[in-house]
Amino acid sequence: MTDGNYIEKAFGQAVRDLRLQRKLSQEKLSELSNLDRSYLSEIERGEKTASIRTLFKLSKGLKISIAELSERFENNL
Image (tube, rainbow, N blue to C red; front, side, top):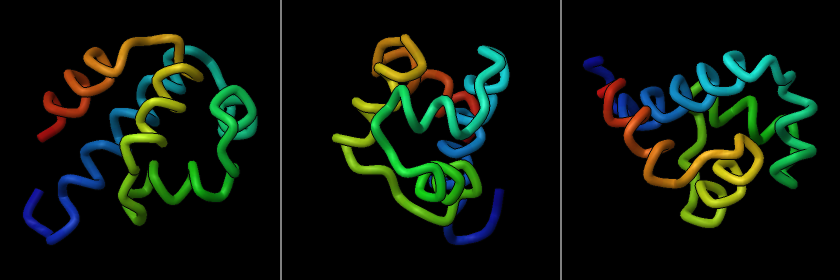
C-alpha cells in the first residue's frame, strides 16, 4: 500500500476479514463492540484511526485477544 493512510487501511482490512470469517454483519459487530455502525464502517474502509479503547472494544466483540487482532493487522502491512 502506498497512500498516506495505508496503516488505517491495513487495520480496517484485518477487522473486516475477521468480521466476515465470523459471519457477522457490521450491525452485529457494532452491537457486540458497543460502537456505532457507521464508525465501524469508516474503520473498515481505513477512513478513521481506531483508538486503543476502540481496539479493545473490537477485540471483545470479535472474541479475540488484542494481540491476535494486532497480529492480523501486521500481516496486512
